[in-house]
Amino acid sequence: MIARRALLALGACGALGGRAAALPARALVFPRDHGSHPGLRTEWWYITGQARAEGRLWGFQITFFRSRVDDTQALQSAFAARQLVFAHAALTDVQGARQLHDQRIARAGFGIAQASADDCDIGLRDWSLRRLPTNAPGASRYEIRAQAEGFALALDCPSTQPVLLQGDAGLSRKGPEPDQASYYYSQPQLAVTGTITLAGRHMTVTDAPAPDNRAWMDHEWSEALMAPDAVGWDWMGMNLVDGSALMAFQLRRADGSALWAGGSWRRVDASGARIFGPKEVLFTPLRHWQSPGSGANYPVQWRVDTPVGSFTVQALLDAQELDSRASTGATYWEGLSLLRNEAKQEVGRGYLEMTGYAQRLRLG
Figure 1 (tube, rainbow, N blue to C red):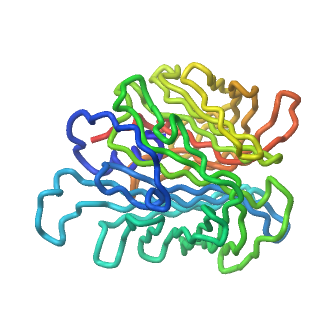
Figure 2: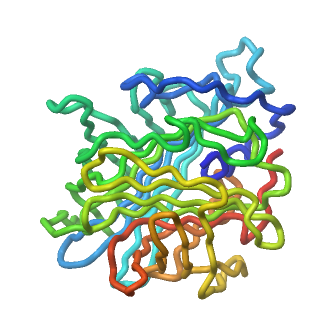
């Protein structure tokens, strides 16, 4: 979503200028649109997933943000910070009931940080996310490398399905005004292989049935701002056991009511997506957890009603709050969660993200 991670980054970048123009509808072209779009204000590449290693379930997240700094665009100095690159990484130890996370920030250039405009190839010091084409037409393999504080990710995530264009053929509305939109696509049902390192201990991802060893990739870019009366958002991306994919989101007002909502569902054969309208998705909180760090009260269990059914989303670990004030300037909740149908059967897993609970997002 346009809010989501990118707006966290925007809040750390200073003045954003005036009202943005509405994005034009256009066909997304790959592999070019896997790459960076520096002419637009904000962008992110985001992979969340789960992996079975040494008989234990792990959740992982890697996110790279690119943010254009408007006030420096006309400066000629090579040292001007025209683009900033941020990155977050997290590891959830479900059995150990803990989450570790780390963050990075740098200006683009000087061999420290870069985001290619040709394909997904982003680096920030010793962290990187690269897309490598495979022999199958249109297929991808995402390579994650992150040596973080206390843990490391060296994971490969090959695609098993084509890209999923969100919204209207990749143009996704995020509010009532036409300028509140983004270009947005996902790649659900990525396979996961590689190693996870925790405190120097290397753990190999082992074969396991779905929904283990599955990941979800989002790439989104925009010039737009979140609606002025939105304070935050709730989002979920779920890989279902049968191979289908479910995404839903809402933007919230200060009183908790939904300002805008949307999402999508794609069947297992990837033959087409059902795109949800803003009045077709309803998030209802069922259980809360209060963070001892920020004091924020997060709904860690939700009922989510969609046109393809009603589901319960439940955190596998309550304490999955990320303090990113040293990079994006915000504190938010993002963590591994499970999905149940109305018969209370577990039908999938994925990630839930909630922002605007520790503080209202401020964009300048």
